[in-house]
Length: 277
Length: 211
Image 1 (tube, each protein chain N blue to C red):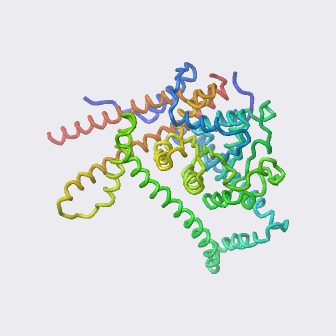
Image 2: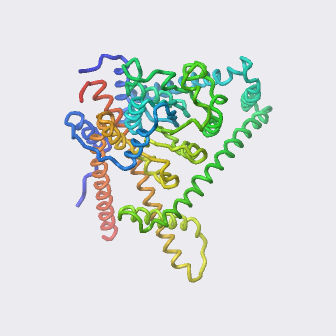
Image 3: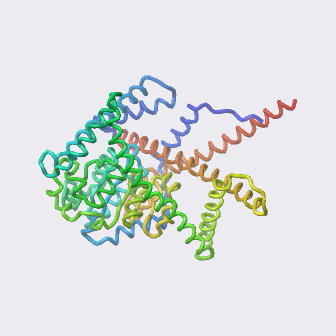
């Protein structure tokens, strides 16, 4: 038996149709909340009003849904509970991502939300040096950074008056890449819990950090974790929108995997038969 | 309803140009590729300028005069382009690498090496605690870690009573690594698929106004 070989363009056309189906006919997938996502939600919920939470990490790919799906409802939750957030960009594009998530969460006063810039949240500028910059920041905030992303001196921002070193940070949220650097230093060196709205691959590769620092590090799993977080927040946002497409892609992915292996298997059998004859 | 925002249209057109590569290399893709590269470089240059400006501002206002040291070291890096004076660039480069390696190695050893060993030992003591799925998870983690480490440690040939069991452990370690690579690549594909989902989501919802 010879299975037909598909051209790349045919495969992509099938994938595109698979992606588009949920946009027109929603599958209405209902995410089951994982223990890690529930713990992240509970941890943020338990923070007293006025607590300072740092949020930041490395880069992001095109504001990918993987991490923004979880971060946006978390920002809404923190704004609702009076928690203050300082955004720390370790890579250049992180600033845009942070601003995109805050805008999407619609928590600022200009959208009728409870947050005011400078009092409840601050965007720091890109801080170069990766781990060197991070260690410096944790030890002395004011010596490491003197202005915010718009060039306003940080001593003019009320929120920054209460942030001098790692001792003032209650929690670190990472929704970007390079979360491992954050885990190694923020939890490893300074003992601050980290909640990582991780990409699915980061979750698979770095899940062991949850064992290394039990009870201090929790990773949510990509867009699925984001959808779970939205469910806990009582909203349907990017995570739910992505979940249907994700399910379709997973089905197609497994289907093509099986088909590819069968094609290779039958191809090998045919070659062996020809060699024997 | 279809969007009337010109930025959404620009985003949609560039996304479609990028996706056109799936059909084959073409001028639309090249246009999107070069536009993206130019925007990234332009953005990085501007951001670099403002980062330097804000970083060295306290020096010029007289608040932190010691910043003259990193400024001079930074300027010394420029000498890298002149062969005759390239040795001057080696000094700041050595400081950068030395400091970052010193900080990294310390954290790496305490977290990834010692932290992992401690986690495996402490989980080993929980072999028969918790529900069955937890027990299986702990067992897999401990056994797989030992097997994978054995694969790298026992690479030399020796003959004694332990050689046969160790050989089996190494073989198991090889399969553990293969399983890990499979999971990692599968997840990487899922993550990349999410980028496509993100782009198509923007096209369908933000541009075309469906959903």
